Image (cartoon, rainbow, N blue to C red; front, side, top):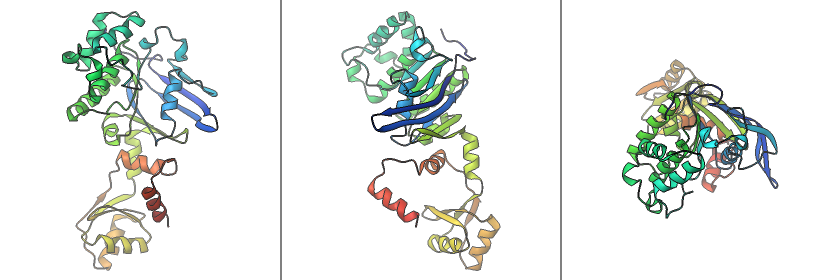
Length: 321
């Protein structure tokens, strides 16, 4: 039943969505697109509005203002919705007494799909040997695979997965990266929410970073990392503390990234070497810093974190002095 998908049906559009729960503002004008043929990472701190946005897309929460559309239509208006958007929000949403296959058969029946399609998706996610086992005995990683199988039942042009890497072992991580790439290559619009930045960096083509209910960045992963890397240098020195002090006095912004490594901005490479040489400090290596998605994420969301531990808060205040 697999097909190559393209066109307006393979898209998710979120436009100026606002949502309050009592006095709590969950969404404050959320706007972004999930385009066909690419994996879009959806990231932000706890409380940023990611789960609420996905629930609005699925019609589980009604927005106070704005629209969320799947292929140009509200999810609640779609006939046989699993054939338009497949979603995994909670891998625990399965009766523990049901086998994996019976769970999928029940869902398939609700959409007019047959047993053949159930067996196809079981094979896609690698659950052939566990298909007739009760879901209550599944590990978290196996429940994730079962939830993804359910999302694929209708062979939808758009797929939305919340924390799909949770509970997976190293082999599972590798499988998931290839699986997501395949979905995008087939022309599907793929939205994945995750806190695992290292996995997103290797999986996502595009990223939507959110905080306090609104979009902070909507950009290609390569473009984001290139912009975050520009003008930043990685420096290795056995005199880290002294080097940080003299470079700061010379007007650079410095931070420690390892026992003998610091990141420097605000001075060119030749200026950094000149300052350290003038102070008799050794340099064992200097190169352009290659930013990671985690670094970019932390930079973009540092003012949007709502729930911060005491130690982290104290460190942030110290860094700001």
